[in-house]
Length: 227
Image (tube, rainbow, N blue to C red; front, side, top):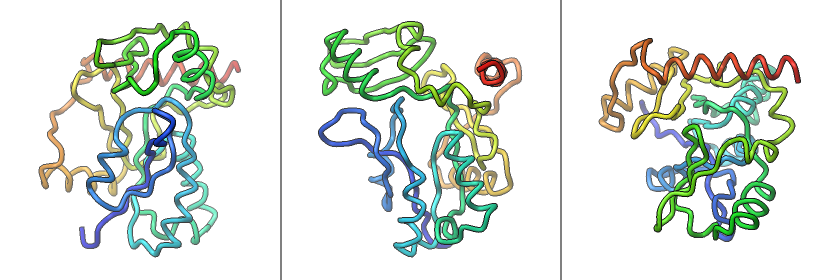
């Protein structure tokens, strides 16, 4: 692919466990450090300007549907200072983000009594699952619904429709569902697969994850229309 691509994604603050911060990753190790789901908002779009200031030749941006929409609008309106190095857009599938203070600090740490530094992994598979060294704490989505950001209620896009590649867990164990949406996305995905960075298998339309993708997309559109 020529020159290396700099990924723009979300990292984690050192003193606030699972508090997302924008991260400009320039090495493979830095990409891995930023891996893992964090269910609160990170202003990743701020890094677009920074990447161009550093004269990065190519940058890949990873973000939520609303952030992908913002990046596409910046490209469409000709904001070259922010987007001239942007090559790929990787969109996350998203039903909405929570506020860090209310979900993580007030509820999980305050009400549920779990030290945030003990959390090794967060995931949503019908419930919020918090993995620690001593086991997994399960929290129903109904319990934490009130901590979701109000702005998310007006969003129609679950699957990051404007991205080159959309990705999401969708309840899969050890796999991520990827939807390739553009020729650039095909180039990126195929290149990573051929280089051995990805192990893939095709998705049948009858597979549960595919059906869940359709249901969640329809649900988000319906909720936004009535918000």
